[in-house]
Image 1: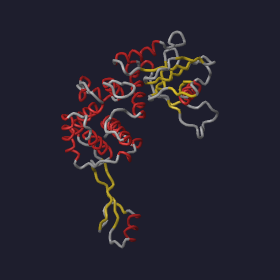
Image 2: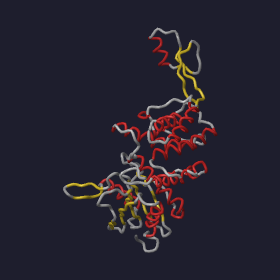
Image 3: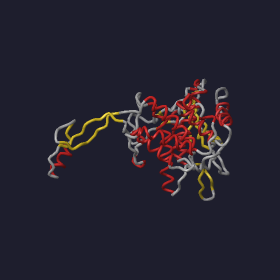
Image 4: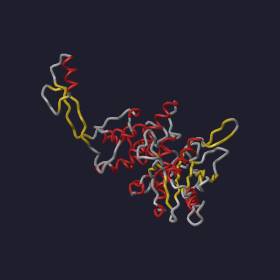
Length: 354
């Protein structure tokens, strides 16, 4: 079965998640990879069922939460603004705030919200819906959160809550897709948002090379601007998706892209998005500061149904090469691995070029 217009197999989605999040390789989810899923909703429901059940055995994450209260005697610390407000309302009370070690924190709220969303989806099987409802019993002290108000980038993990990383990422897929469907007046998780899938696609390719080709030192490296002085002013940060270093010293910078449409048309001319070209060009030229020609760049797109797909190479004056490739996610996973390996087989390890 497929999940969007790029025809990504549900099986491949699981494999990508398994590379991107090492937790999926554990015994908790060992049997998930062997099951057949008709859609992503049931895949995510199964992952949450198993992951949350395991987390419950370890205990729900707790953290100190500031609880505001209006009291006759001081408890915790005084809320000055609150006291002024109460004084203006002629109330004889103190506005206080004290810390409570609680499970009602943002991580548990996100997971509970995602579970509620999945339960409301008619395409989730009755058995999984029953298991999700059972899990909710353990979240009685946890509230839900308005999906619109979740600040995903502000969520941080530490050694006490690192086991929540996969559960929160899966919940993010569910919550953000639910928001998009709500806006469209739909009620089913038929597609993924490009934002989420772009992130997963990037992380999958990086982790694939890390697992199978550690000798290439795969990394997501920051690239410095090749300018005089240390201050870059208003220049944006540059960070590569995948940075590979070959034994002969040559480097390949891969920038992954997941878009519903790879190319754009203007005046009957089809071309790649200019912003993508400028981006990879900037990565290559600012890395190859000595103009050696030993740094190449690649735009790697998730394949779509478009008639014209990028499969090209352009050589720059210094000898650097820019590659434009697609990765077909609508094939057995061995084929995907074969395409990723083919990128390395064409690599400049011995000939100095692709």
